[in-house]
Length: 457
Image 1 (cartoon, rainbow, N blue to C red):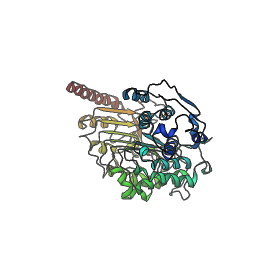
Image 2 (cartoon, rainbow, N blue to C red):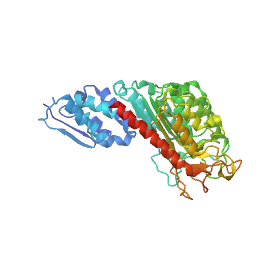
Image 3 (cartoon, rainbow, N blue to C red):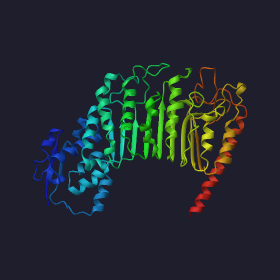
Image 4 (spheres, helix red, strand yellow):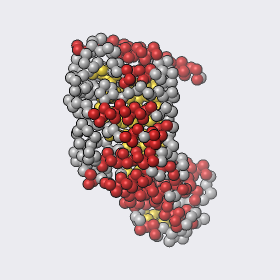
């Protein structure tokens, strides 16, 4: 039996960690270098130098403690720990606890937009024993200095030094042999200059986005899941490069959300047109192993800007979620319904969120393919579909008894496209057939699910 008191008060406490009756070198089973690398790894997870103080206080292990508890019990203790700090503390208890807790605490590596966090990641990558445990990397790009009016000045960001350090860290992700999940969540506000050209003086956030993508393209990691949230919809030649597109080749799950400075009454600008028509189309065409695809936009996509599905067929696709897309039958290459039907033999789950049926500039609210026609096609031709979700979160209250789920949009003039993917001020001709058609579709899908349950019994 043994007793150990280890007290940590910030970084200075590290120097005193081995002064007790039994030092950290013995507990962790390694020398001073290994101890330092372990702390750098903790620091990388936490993402800030000041957070090394998390262990302020004392860890007291009574001399009567049994050290030969069954491995299963120790694993249950670690698995039921409520927070990361507790797991980090458990690493100091014994070699066995160090091994068990490390596998849990280092599964997900959180990186923040700071030089300190980037440098901590670089230190972790140099420690093979810790790097081999990481399965997911998550970048959180929300600035720590909260803006007063949703706007962040570049002086409040990590700046050029941060972009360089983060790019260097992300270029080394191939050193994580078990990495399969990557999540990049950028700042959720558009701060670029409102212009019909690609920004000549991009903000820190747009520059950082491109630097991280370039780092991934330099040495593409092998991923199963990739999440890209709050991607700024600005075209870039990098999206056409084979090295960058290689990142998408082996993906099974892909989620992309795009933001752009698109307000009601604005005309659609050339950069966002090029981004969807060329860059996003190219990305999807190179993700042929997908089983799950999630595409979200904060602006309507369908007519202008239009996402071309002409070269996109995902032979393994089972789940599809799209948000703020307009179903436009007048443009065959960009027709969302045609893309859905192309996957009738595999698609089992379909979610249309904040989507609308678009009628172009047709007068009198006459639509060439209303919602009830869409539901009928899905019922008759999507033979593998088992679950369908239709939601519309528009703020404007529907009028004339409309169901907010059945949004109809149309071009107001030759410049402004659909002002928003909302329920219009006037009901579409024939919209009274939409709800019965949806109910028939949902009834067929319920029968399929019930039949599948009976088959599995």
